Image 1 (tube, rainbow, N blue to C red):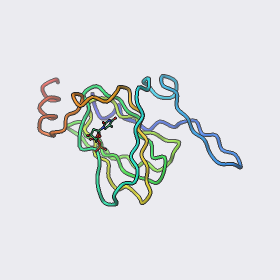
Image 2 (cartoon, helix red, strand yellow):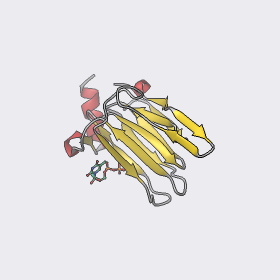
Image 3 (cartoon, helix red, strand yellow):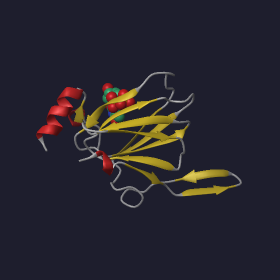
Length: 137
Ligand code: TYD
């Protein structure tokens, strides 16, 4: 796992006089099947989210409203992505630490996830994350 596997994926985008529509099919537009959807909204201005890594979970993170920054970290390198368009998603492979920050007013974050929720899949302690990932290389 390295941070270079993370990337922005452009989703299909249908625009007409009524507005816009985007969609994603697991295995077709994104590189995993979708087992779960969750979303962050009514976010408190100035607060951050994330602050963890996943052992096996893959995700696509979409700013369906507003904008925010996702900072990814593989223990060696940090890369920040600004998400600000509903037709773009950030693919986050397993094993990367992530911090979500700089949410605009009214921002909403949709996450497509490859697995059901499991607390066992989280690293919530950064030192533990570093030890586990360095130990596997
Ligand atoms: P967490 O993943 O830590 O959210 P964030 O990274 O945005 O801070 O989850 C916050 C809480 O919600 C935590 O107690 C676990 C719970 N939760 C679920 O029960 N199911 C889910 O699918 C998710 C994403 C979280």
